Length: 124
Image 1: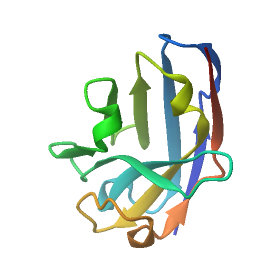
Image 2: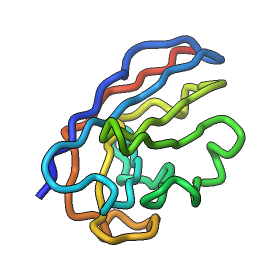
Image 3: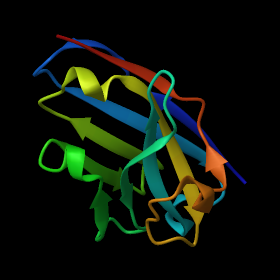
């Protein structure tokens, strides 16, 4: 089992940047593919980005391509989401998730473990 704790959310103006972190504890972090998802008010949970166990493969939803970057540091048991050029439509609760032996799936059902989420609010 793995426990996930997100941090780094907050309020930012449109065009600004934030870096989310997700610290993992428990089982060997490198055994997990990691994903970031978000859920806006009244909306379904949406895939944002994913990364495989060693960071060599990354995946993004089209709406964040070129603006967001997912990365991981297995020595620190942490996955990051660097978010640049933020837009009001990026406002949501952001969740990190872990998929044991996964490869970076885009569906939330593939992920066994979830963090509690961190709020990101982008003002216009």
